[in-house]
Length: 276
Image 1 (cartoon, rainbow, N blue to C red):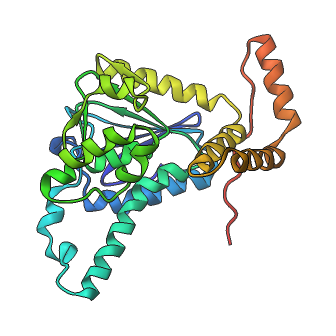
Image 2 (image 1 turned 90 degrees about the vertical axis):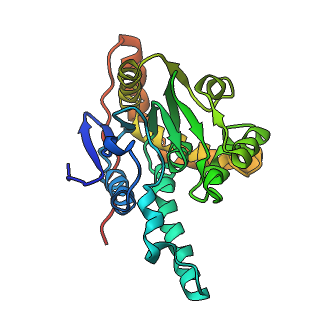
Image 3 (image 1 turned 180 degrees about the horizontal axis):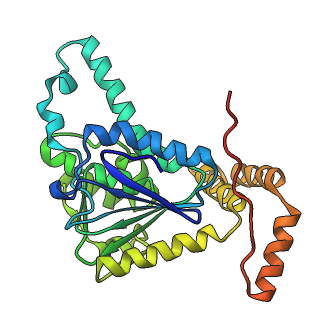
């Protein structure tokens, strides 16, 4: 795997693990992160070798949001004229891609969260497919507490996983959402007492996903993502078209045979993306 400044990335039997690499500063997201992360996730997706990704970190907190040095860089936050405001808009769109790329990747993304999940950390995990948390964790839309509107995806994705009134309370007040409440509302899949046990179980779940047909898993994620904002009839038509496109009798028979014999089926990886 390639080496990165802002995180560590490993791959084992189809399961990628990406560990945020700024524990000394509560895993704040630096300029390096926003430059490296989308390209790294796209490379994993394009390879076809990854069947699940676990996003995690070490230290007291999962992610304390954007590195505050961003706001000390006047070249980044200058909005003194229409021209630089247009440049600022493009910067926001570029940073949004660090979250969107998790949502559009062919493989499921699992987030394992401990301690604080703040600001851009919430943006990241809201773009994941599955979320797990320790009992000492909490989620905060921190932007409102520093005079900003959240703009990397929380306000758009949280309403898909949480009741509207809860999202509005978080967005308007900057209050904490506890892991217990998040689990009760369906945003978090499971709450753990400790970080080590959580990460062990999340990796186990990722390995279970990796044992399934990667084509069927990718199609399932595509269908689930397609549902948002569409009628049931439209989504069902899309599901029929997708199933017809990916249906593989050999993979189905291998799955059934493995299920009956209580063994593991072997599947080929997804194709790597065609190169122009």
